[in-house]
Image (cartoon, rainbow, N blue to C red; front, side):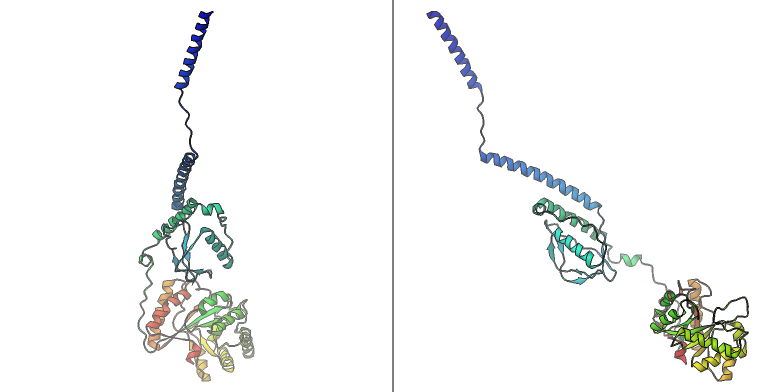
Length: 417
């Protein structure tokens, strides 16, 4: 029994020894303090934030490189690029602050104020409403969390700076626009002699008041001859009067070519003196007050008839208006009829300006007009409202300052009476 107890004791001692050995072989557990946990958590958060920031900045650069910015238009039509925003500012964009009127009537600026993106969006909405422009889609304002996030604010400022830098780099350098503009046309205009005076008469008004406006906008004295009994005859006469130009009756008369229809209210070869006078009085009344003269539309058959053209001159004397012979025929008897009555009349000089609807050919006719004016003192020339409206008003506007610089005068027939 004693031997068995000793053996059992030895076995128990061996188990204990082995068990103790195993306990001693285990590594002790590491316990972290709360401070260390907070530090490690903070490092992990900072690493994540830095990675997110780099990702946002890279995407913002790529987006800014593909964005097209349109320069603003000022009220005078000049194009200007926005100022480049300094990249040192993270949470705001720069807006100049001294007032200046833009094309939409809003105040732009020239000194300085820093504004957040949300304020800029509010300004855009207000400008759209005040200018009457159609509403545009504006991104929603940033949430409070986004406004407090330095990464979001930095990306917004950087994106704005990238876009504005591209506009500034695309802006042409001084002198580039001048080099690309076509040179102004040069005119070979001789100096005026003998008090050379130019009288421009534009015939055939009555179909388009809008076309008449393009002529009466010219910056020199001008006469417009209005046909009667057309849809816009009275409206055209009103446009001429309102512009302060001179309106006359463009009286239709029968031509030698009887197949030509001179139009309503015409003087014909079958009419007697009383009938001719009545038709002219009706046409003058239709155009309203202030009609100061009369010239013939077509009318080669009538102006070559001493009696009938004499009746036309009698009506002019009765109304105190002048007569301008358009000289549609070399056989005109108007000068003879005027001499018999002791009247002074006017006559067209040279060909019509716009026999050919071509700018160079019109310019050649105008050079002939200058030569006639220099030789005779006065040149009365005739064009046509609708026929040459696409060329003649612009050509005369270009010529005018050059003609004035060379000493040419401008007048209407009534100014020469």
